[in-house]
Image (cartoon, helix red, strand yellow):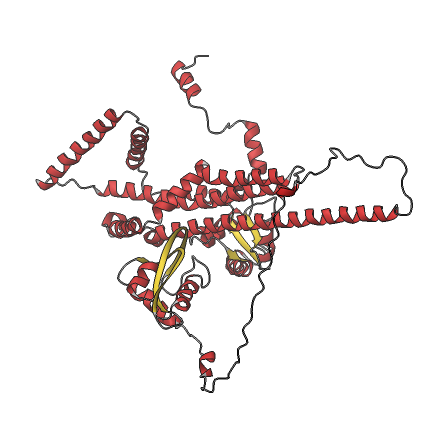
Length: 509
């Protein structure tokens, strides 16, 4: 049988990402939730309902009552179309079945401090839905934008890994020459424009990458949860010293941020948290969506605020990691409590055994004490006596003051008008897309001091840090601190400056 030597040599240098042999595919069919979903007889119901409920609206969590109500409405419509025997089970039974371990299409869990179940989509389900969406017919298949993206990536890798300064400067000068030549052509009136086909091709590529980026967040969260489960199993089976256990756990936690995934996510978050980048994204999206060629594609209305969806998904991922860290701390505290209780049980056992043999003195050698010796303490090493200072008390006659005291000040209360604060945030956001709390307070100084600052923080935390408050969002960047200063009065009535350090609070449209 003839073999292509070139193809054989290339296959040795390019290993396959997945071995698609019969055994591997049979294992995937039996164990992978995405394949089980596609093979399910209820796949049209599951995929359509979950795509519309979670993926299309970028919803990360939904309570059991709300999800069951939405599924009941969906089942009612389907039974009206297909007959009363279609999907005979209740919505609650379907949700519990989809969240069962042998299905793995939904993740059912409980938030700390609540007794109502929450549901979220699993990464495998989102992959299956994305694959089904790729089967639909596209207006056209563009290849130019993807080829340009590949060349741009290779150029970034090559330029970012070039250690020779001479070659790097030569490349930069070459780019500068090309830019100068292009500027000269534009100033001369030669302005090259993309045709409609190129615009559609690039916009389709943008939409696909934007959707894939949102889907990646669920997989990042899932990886963090798997790492947390691995650490918990290690704690449960640990037999060594507690110090060694804590050292290993902290090493695992540091590995999250130092891993390739952790560093990439941190770089993405730092890039997106830049107010300049957000404003630039909003302007460019608004400009592109008004193009006639893009309007012909009927883009998803949520594309206009896709960067806000990225922010919400990233904020949810960060909150998930913080919750896992808190739960791990409580898990370690419980284990420490059990160890202390075990020590007390051992001490009580020793006391009981000692009392049991109190009247029957054991014969022979009971205990050996090594390194017996006398402690030598020289007289001059002893500290000198220092007499205590006896305080002298002066007899003072206390005379009651006959002046009237205004006791009404004891009942004065400071009431902060939260409606006024919300109006101040809305008024500023009409002029600009976002503003930090520090910038807001520089334009609108605090009138009631610390109480008003706490009211602003309560406004940011009203329901959840990524839930819309009226017509704006409140986001908190815990990785950065900002100083807040305001003028106040001390007990003597003099003007003083107060200062507080707190995480960066960002109000956005």
